[in-house]
Length: 115
Image (cartoon, rainbow, N blue to C red; front, side):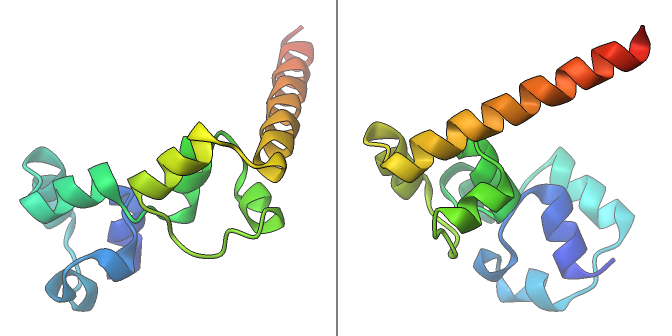
C-alpha cells in the first residue's frame, strides 16, 4: 500500500514519519508488524505528534470541518493540543458544542431507525 494509506491506518502524520517510511510501499505484513511492535519513532509520533487531522479533531472533540472553520490548517503537537484544551478559544468551545449536537442527532436518528 502507499505510505499515505499506511500512515492513515497507523494514525500518524506522514510528513513527520521517517523518510524511509514516506518513500517505500508498505505491505500488509509490514503494517501488521508495525502495529504489533511499533518502533520508537512510531511510538513517539502517536504520543507527541504532530497529529493528522482526524486524530487532531478527535483529541479536540470536534469534527475535521470544525478544524477548518477554526483556522487550524497545520498538524499540531501534543503540547499545542494541550495548550488549546487548557485555555480553549471561543471557536473551539463553539465547535465542541456543534460537534456534540451533531453526534446526539446522529444517535437519535440511529435509535429511531431501529424502532
